[in-house]
Image 1 (cartoon, rainbow, N blue to C red):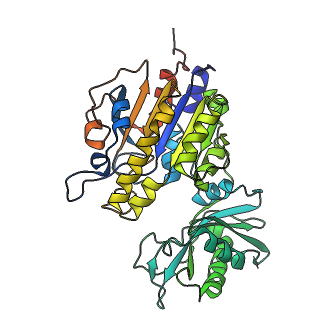
Image 2: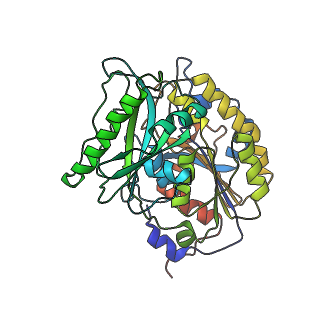
Length: 400
């Protein structure tokens, strides 16, 4: 894995274009049929592209490590996720255009359902509507605890952001979300003594939220995770000499893109409008990150058939991309979310990289099993950007 500072010395500005399609949670596992979601789906356009590409698998973080979406995306963008630890709260908050200040600390919130013994029945409160989320955030927004003002900002469906604004807040606070149903609510515990007073403020807010939401079934409680203050990342423009754009529906991915220096294209709300936006803006940028969320949410819901349908839907839209004839096309996922597991997993993720300069292999179908035998082999996700840059003619030779 090459470091970004090293790449910065080699990158050059060119007219070539790179499109990275990230189908969130793309990787799967075999169900009772003996096939993964990708193996089951009918995706002739992706298969045709794979035949002209070099394929393989990526490890988002390292072998055996199950990643969150934030660090997994950082790896794909060429950043070291162990060096740049970013709480999910910051990403969600930046994604909804909140004006973050130096006094702010954000957390990612889930509305959830608990029983009368504080046991979590549903971590996502039945994926309540965004409209209902907005109503509930109105009840939580504007509280003040020990001189700290609290903002509750709706994100999408059951997800919302909580921003704590006060002096001397420290984000070394562990999640109150046990990330598993059937367990009791947890307190937010400081991971560093310096965060003790911050954790007390967070727990007072959680207690107030419990009282406010008591009769709001199914969203009768909140879970908080990913506490984070602002993090400064090297910008795409500086490291890779790219003019990057983000095309995404979900705010968290817009937030991460902004943190990396990408311009977020607005008014995107469906898969169809994502691919249309790519076509409409193709002349303006030389790097596009196009994010597909429903592959992940269907996998998290354990819905194998729905994940198959999402893959097929993306495949039908792929000609809108290939007809633009970008110099490099990357299709992959940030991590695996097998429906049989109903959550993120450690399994390597299939990837294809197309360019007219690539040394294509013998992969016939784009799926996990075929990609095992692809010419890329299994690589760290952080290697994807330098490989893409080379295929786009954007990396100089190293040494004499």
